[in-house]
Length: 251
Ligand SMILES: Nc1ncnc2c1ncn2[C@@H]1O[C@H](COP(=O)(O)OP(=O)(O)OP(=O)(O)O)[C@@H](O)[C@H]1O
Image (cartoon, rainbow, N blue to C red; front, side):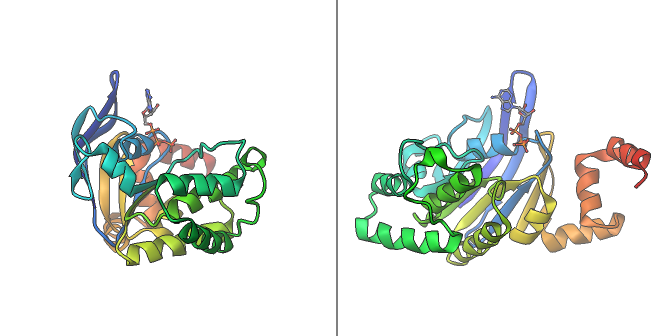
């Protein structure tokens, strides 16, 4: 469903993403975990056709992104980290506008919109988007993407700005989509979120994929050498310099 090989992005001399390999199967929620500036957003932008890779191959739903960009964009769902929406539209106008672009029949749209709004507690569709908080926008963005029921979904830091209830609903909703055969790729810089939501986790640091596996596999790896998964993550992404600072602070 999602396949990338030797994926690379250079910004001048900076190797933002360095020859990474990603493979996400149907039914799988893949968490792309890494610290700030590790290359997560750059990767998701390449996978969704927003940014051209410097090198590498990307195939989504079996189609090469170089040759089938429009068809891929038609079929995937993308939730960006910063929801960009039309401030002058009301919530329901925005949702209908998006669904019309994707040619969803009006009746079906109404039903799906009602269901997803109920689940996420979206009761502000009458208001103008310009008057929404960041979290309100994020939830409406999520709703308009998920209600299309795409088979491949990319989410960049989806829980940022969401309250605990909405984050829990999102987790259950994504699980249901995956159980119905969808492939989900989400980025996060929070280990706990990756642990709770994802079947498989890839850890990226300074543009390189430094570890990958199921939660169990990563735990096994950490048990062999570290006290916890958090220590493994910190070692892989922070190293000794970080340990020195922690020691200085007396933990
Ligand atoms: N358009 C750009 N031009 C130059 N450098 C860029 C550009 N976009 C990203 N970078 C650099 O690439 C590196 C990776 O950035 P990226 O946004 O992918 O990180 P990230 O893992 O998503 O971080 P965060 O968790 O903070 O959002 C950073 O060093 C960043 O400064």
